[in-house]
Length: 359
Image 1 (spheres, rainbow, N blue to C red):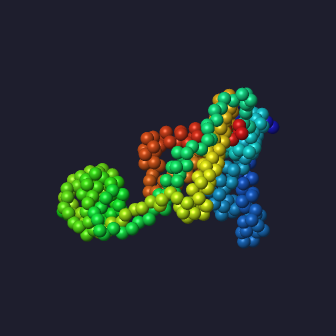
Image 2 (image 1 turned 90 degrees about the vertical axis):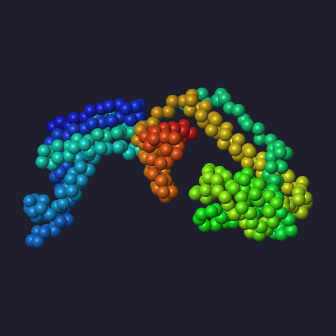
């Protein structure tokens, strides 16, 4: 006979259909019977072969939760396939449907579920032959090379202990600061690069010299209890080192396994040029893809991107938990509520899936 199963269809978008399925009592009973046979075929009771004991005895030893779960799986599996066929849906087999069991009652022989059915994506490619794109320059300037050389010099600075003069800007000073209350604190500071009051106090000090000064500490000072406060502090200069940057000559190039300064500049020009070309390729690719997205129509099922969004959100929550933060705190740091954060992840995941399909 024809099934009395009721199917209500709602087209959520061109690639997602929501089906609400209400089963007739007979189908619910069949699901429970099939699940019962599968679960009890290996149950052995004294005096009976496996699965052959009377039904009432087997029902007593079968955990009801197992029976309900197996019946639900059986009922939904069969009814979902039937409902999809009844609605004549071409399902996207690469993406799983999202099923929610809304009602299941063995005694009342009642079962109801909703399923979000994914349909294959639809891509209408726009005109890709005349995409507007601007190529950034890849020339390497002398200034870029000089900046890179300065970074290399900075990485090869040497320190030499100083004992015969006072501290000057650029020196590395090891300081001991003791306020009226609390323990003394040690710091390493580059003279002229900490904060004005401390720099003024340290300039000209000799090693092992002490002085009492009033210091107005900045709000971002590394010692929390001193942040934004003014204290009278005993400053001791424990040690002082002069920092010297290597001269820019052939021996500096040789320390980098290159013959001379000219060879160093040529190598840097090649490296910077290569990095720029790679960056330009990425910029062009992103620009072309964005322009093509604007000219194309890409429809995907909700199932395709919702799973991705859920995974990303879960990963973010786990990552923040390791840093001792909740998702709520992370959202606040980014100027959002958790709801807005979830929406942002959804939009990003949807765009990611659409772009992947377009490529």
